[in-house]
Amino acid sequence: MTDFNKIQETLVNLDAEGVIQLVNDAVKEGTPASDILNKGLIAGMDIVGEKMENEDMFIPEVLMAAQTMSQGVEILKPLLGEDDTSAKGSVIIGTVKGDLHDIGKNLVAMMMESAGLTVHNLGVDIAPEEFVKQIKEKNANLLCMSALLTTTMPMMKQTIDAVVESGLRDQIKIMVGGAPVTQGFADDIGADAMAPDAGSAAKKAKAIAG
Amino acid sequence: MSQELIIEQVAKTPEKVVLCGQDEKNDLNLTENRVHLGTGGAAIKILDPDTGEVRSTTLKDLYNVSRLADQLENIHFLVRPCIPTDIDEKDYDINMFYACLSGSSKHVMAGVNDEKGLQNVIEMASMIAGSIDKLQKRPFISVITSFAISPLKLCTQSTHIMQEANRNFIPVALSSAPMAGSTSPLTMAGTLAQLHAEQLAGITICQLTNPGAPLLYGGIPGMANLKTMGYSGGAVECGMMNAAIHQLSNHINVPNYNSSGLTDSKIPDAQAGYEKAFTALLAAMGGSNYIHHSAGMLESMLTIAHEQFVIDDEIIGNCCKVLKGMECDAEHLALEVIDSVGPGGNFMVSPPHHGTYENRIL
Image 1: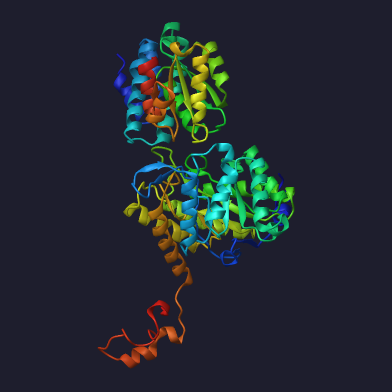
Image 2: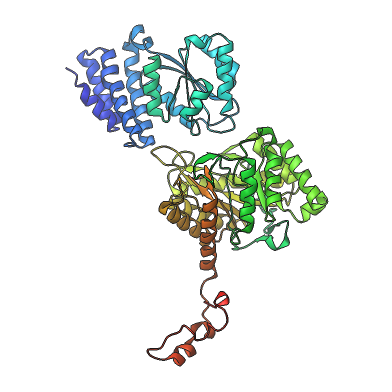
C-alpha cells in the first residue's frame, strides 16, 4: 500500500531523490499511476502552493519542488492513460505584446502544470491575434495574460477585445496577472479572474477551468 | 567581444564627465571620489499631498516635484521621479523632460522610449541652450539607457537609443540592474561580477559607436525578495553592493551612476528612515559619483511622496556631513578653549562659538 502522505511530505521537503524513489516504489507495488500523480505529486504541490501563498516558502524552493514533481511525472507518463492526462483544463499563457518579462509568467505556467493542467506557454511579446489563433488551435478553455509594465497593461484590454471580436469569449475564461495588475484593473477590462501570485493563480485556474 | 577589443574600447572612455545644470551653480563634476546624490525612478504612484491617499502620478505631479527638488539644497540633481500616467505614452519623452527642465535648474536625467523621442528631446534642449553645440558643451540633460537585460543580454531598442545619444555626444548612464536571486546569482560577489561584464559590453558598444562618448558606468545591483520575487531596494545588501559599484567603475577609470536610498516601506515610517539612511550612507561612503533613487521614493521604486523628498534631503545632507569628516587642526582641537574654561565651567558662550550659530565651526 503506497503512503501518499509520504510522497507529499518528501516533495514539500524538496528531497528530489526521495520523491523519485517513492514514485518508483509505488509503480513497482502496482499502485495506479493516476493515483500516484493525483494523490501524491499533485496533492503535494497543492501544499507547496499554499505555503507559497502564505509566504512560508521561498520562490526558488517552489521552483525546486515543481522541477522534482515534473521528474516524477516523467516516470509516470508512459503509464498514464489518455483520460488521466487530458481530463483537466487546457490553458494558453503568455506575456502581452510589447512586454518582454517572463520570470513570473513562467512560474505561473509551471505551477499550473504541477496542478495537472495542460499548459501552452506561448512566450513573451504575444500579439492579440496570436492569442486568438492559439485559443482556436489548442481548443483552450483558459487564457492567461501577464504584463509587468504599466505601459503594456492596456494591451490586456486589447487582447480581450480581440477575443470578443473573434466570437470565442463565451467558451473561454480569462485570467490576468503581473506586478502592477490589480483586481480593480481586471474588473475594468472584463477579465474573469486576477491572481496576485503563482500559487493562487494555479488554484484559481483549477477552480475555473479544471 | 574579445578581451583585447574591450580593453581597447574602455580606454577611450572619458575619465571626467561634467553634468551641467541650466544654472551653473548646479554643475556636477563627476570625477575621482566626488559624491552626488539625487532623485530617481519612474514611479507610477504618489501619496497625494492633500489627501495622503495613494493615486496615479500625473504630468502636473512631475512638474511639482521638480520644483520641490529644485528648492531642496542637498538634492544635487533631478532624475525624473515619476511617469505622467495621464498623457499618451507616445508623448512621454518630450513632456517629461520639459516638465523637469521647466521646474528645476538642476541637471535633468531620464530614460526615453525610442530614438525619435530622444531626437525630439535633444532638439528641445538645443533650443533652450541656444544650439546643439552649446548643449554639447554644457549638457544639462543626459539619458538613462537600460541597454542590458540581465543576465547578459542586450535590449535592441535601448541599445539603439544609447547609440543615438553617443552620436550626439549627450552623456548616457548605462543602466544594468540585475536582481540577486532572480536575474543574477544570489551572492553579492556573483551579482557584481555579472554586472561588471554587462557594463564592459555596454561601454564597448558606446565607444565603437562614437569614440570618446561621455558615459557613466551604470551599476544598479538589486535584490529579489525570495518570497515574492519583487524588488527589495531597502535591503542593506543593496547598499553594500552599490557601495562596491564605485570601486568597479574606478578600476576602469570611468565615473559611475548607481542606486541607493530606497525603502520597501509604502509610507514614510521608521522602516523607511533606517533603510534609506543605511543604504544611502553606504553608497556615499563608497565614493559613488552619481547616486540616484536617493530622494522621494517609497515602495522600492513604485511610489513618491512630497514629504519623503524633504526627509530624504535631510538624510542626504547627513551623508554629505559624514563625508566631510572631522577637522583636526589646532583650532578644531580647541585645547586653548578647554584650558580657558577650566574645570567645572561650560562652553556655551566660549570660542569657537563667537559669531552666529549658523556659521559655527564643528
